[in-house]
Image 1: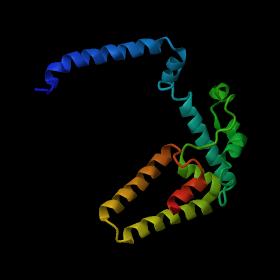
Image 2 (image 1 turned 180 degrees about the horizontal axis):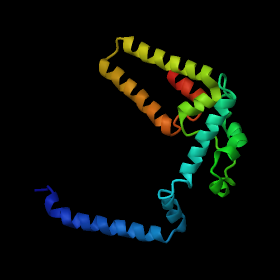
Image 3 (image 1 turned 45 degrees about the vertical axis):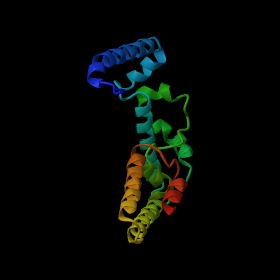
Image 4 (image 1 turned 60 degrees about the vertical axis):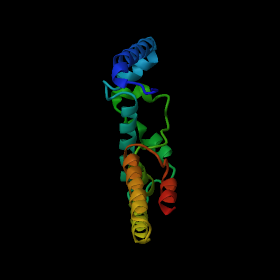
Length: 177
């Protein structure tokens, strides 16, 4: 008696959802800031994509200068400031004037390599391998082990495109824990 027939309600719900969507689009169209941000999806050499690409290029320049030991954990923003002019597209100099120091490469493995070099990257890889090996040999519930390993893989994949652990010492502490 108290059940709702969703098939009967469908057209009304779809119409209401469409009106809400049109209202949101109408309000958004009047906001120039939102329109400018939406435009960054069309022109990939502008906004966040260009900033991320320049941070990755700067990380490569930092690693090329100090391949074995890196520039030091937590020092990415200083290295980025030194390599910023060489890493941003000339057509986009104007957008970087207000954000001189980017603190992150937006890729944990790349930032780890730039900050700690091959030595730190090797230690980190060894730490991850040891954590996985110990977890698999722990004799714990296989479902729990699989879930923890899947979470670690998800964090590594996410960290390759973003910055969930932010700095190298945090990544080491996570995997040590």
